[in-house]
Amino acid sequence: MRWPLLWASGRQAATLLCYPGGPRFCSAARGPEMDEVLRRTVAACEPQPREKTAPAALFEEQTREFVRFYRGLSAEQRPDFLAKLTAEYGVQHGRVGELCGRLAEAQCRDLGALLQAEERLRNALTPRYSVLISRIGRLEDGVKFIVDLRADVLRYLKMRPADSPHIKEMNGILKTLLSNWFSTGFLKLERVTWQSSCELLQKISQYEAVHPVRSWTDIKRRVGPYRRCYVFTHGTMPGEPLIVLHVALTDDISKNIQAIVGRDPAPEMTEDVNKISTAIFYSISSTQPGLQEVELGNYLIKRVVKELQDEFPHMKQFSSLSPVPGFTKWLVAIISDQMKEGTTNRILTQAECKEIQEIIGDSVLEKLKSLLITNEWVKSKKLVQVLELPLMRLCAWYLYGEKHRGAALNQVANFHLQNGAVMWRLNWLADTSPRGISSSSGIMANYRYFLEDTNYNSVQYLRTRHIEASEQVLSLVAQFQKISKL
Image (tube, rainbow, N blue to C red; front, side):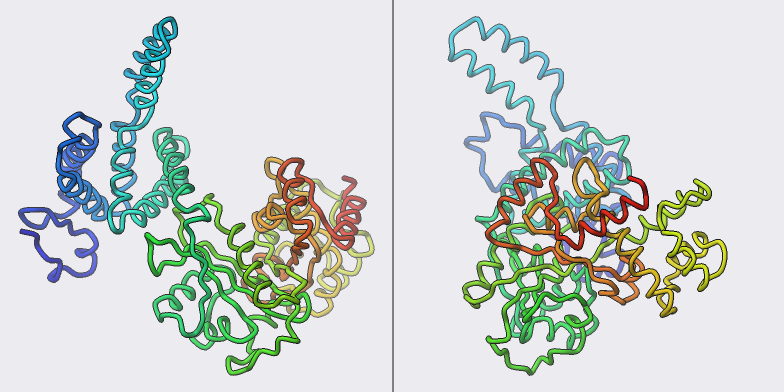
């Protein structure tokens, strides 16, 4: 019989394993038991002739046993389990070497022998645990398990980057599998409203990663008049949003986030279609860590644009209002480097240095660095005014000029540029929340989507890394280059 979990609570419930014959605990399921579960489960997935007649229910039960066992492992135990699984039940390298020799021999024979040898080599190059992963995907909640499994794999790679060749192989297999399963044809676009289920609204609130939801009134506002919230869902994960996009419907391109996530418009307002000409994408959040690098955001924006055009045929302007995460951290590092170089100033003009010095005293760079770290600079109106041009100039360079493997260093910028947007405008003190000041020095960016040019811009950026930018951005970049002598 199977023992119910009714008596377990707290940490016990999280670590309890259900097995035929009674309950067991993960603390006792480390050495021999872990080996036995792996051996029995993966061995059952080995392609053998008897599988053709073996009952499917037999393998389903063994697969469920594996899922139960893995879910019962603690976060500390899972890395070792994954390491053992991928190392001992991956590709049989000796078998691959043997078949490579046979393939060379088969090339001298007929085509049928060559194709057979290639098929055997192809099978040998497939890790043995791949069959297990495929079977897990057929379980009722199997796809969600695999998504969460990849999240664990990514955490492992972050923890042990130098000691994970087999885990890297599994990550590649899972990424390819999930990219196929979560391709745009299998995704469903849903609009979230106040009439949506409480569970969905709560998840939308919990998953919001850009502008935290403060209350139920706040989430009601974000799905109410002059607002839209869209999610992608997948048939195998019902009720689970994969990625969330919040949109504000306005009459112009917004330059301040507080006007969008603040108190207006009230949830009871009625939309006036004549006042809506612009869609502002002000937040996009991926909810599943296991779907990292699986393309979802690009498709979601494109689908939402089409949805909005159907609803508002006269809508002409589409733009983001995006944070600049990492800018303050980058700026502090630049100032630190500047301080090491000595008296040569490549950040501020002499006039700017003098103005700042009059406000904060000597040791301008050292004190400015401290003020940026503590966010204290925003408390001085004079300092806020003096810092506007130099920080906007530096932010323009950070977004436009700083690169990672040829692409924009800033991930938000890279995302919108890949989608074909134009780096259109930087906005000073656009986000005065503690998070906005700490991360972006209060600056936000509009990435504007000119629909007739998005495909061309996207191709140009992906092929040549050319960034399409407005005169404002290019002017700020040119000023930075002149001062820094770049």
